[in-house]
Amino acid sequence: MVETLNIVVLGAPGVGKTAIIRRFIYNDFTEKYNPTSSRCIYRPSVVLHDSVYDLKVMDTPPLTVLPARSSQEWMDSRCRGIRNANAYILVYDICCWESFEYVKMIRQQIVENRMSSSSEAPVIVVGNKRDLQKQRFTSRRAISVLVKKTWKCGYIECSAKYNWHIVLLFKELLAGAVITGCKHNHSAIRIQGALHRNRCSLM
Image 1: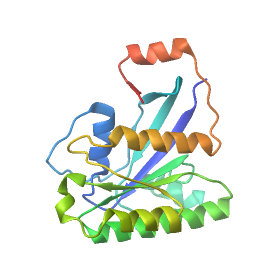
Image 2: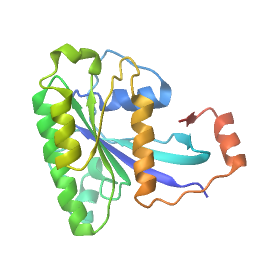
Image 3: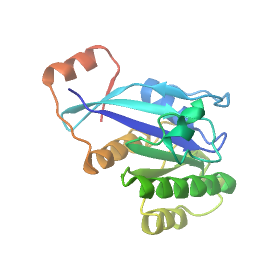
């Protein structure tokens, strides 16, 4: 049986959550902005270090409060599956300070929820829109130091528009999820089948 990893993508409106997911899975990008109004699930497969993983990637609309209990999670369809995620991707726009403040708020809620549930899940903070480097609100180093040393989270910058560091983002996230305890095994037959279906990315 191949391990299924649940990944939740969170961020403020317009930061490029959906664009990152679609670039990774379908290798497409559109300039048109369509706000995410409801939870959307993507189910790609990936091969990493000769092991195959089924991913359940959840694209969520912006949330102000994460569910603290299972009952709250199931009362709001936008939140279902957030509490049992194996990993979190928190996306902000490197040109928008408010979007980073949103990530700061959500990350704190994840920490508090995980402390109460005694479970761990890697969190990676993602600065999207690196193609707009000249318009960024602060230096990459300042954010990287804060996120890595103070928050103890992973950090990467990417550009969904130009497909820069998108695969690296998911590769690092998957490696972190495996290290924190997600069991994995592989099968040559399963890998060949996934590749044949053309829904599997090699990393």
